[in-house]
Image (cartoon, rainbow, N blue to C red):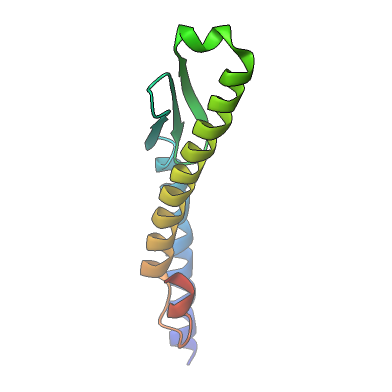
Length: 108
């Protein structure tokens, strides 16, 4: 019984380390999103940190239009980055979890 418990604890510690490494790696995974007409482009990493914003000069003439573009494109980019983040962490957590009945449904 204690051997199983020690094995599970070791597996959990290993999984925690893999999650930490994965979170660090996500700083290097870039997600791009642009407006449908290509006038605004944003780049985030998978940890949802904005790395770059590129704005067409035409948008600079209309503050309200630029604000609308930023809201739409940033929200799409954040959603994409969140999906990448969750998929990466879920894969690590699912792979590293000990086989506990009923727990597998948490990572689907």
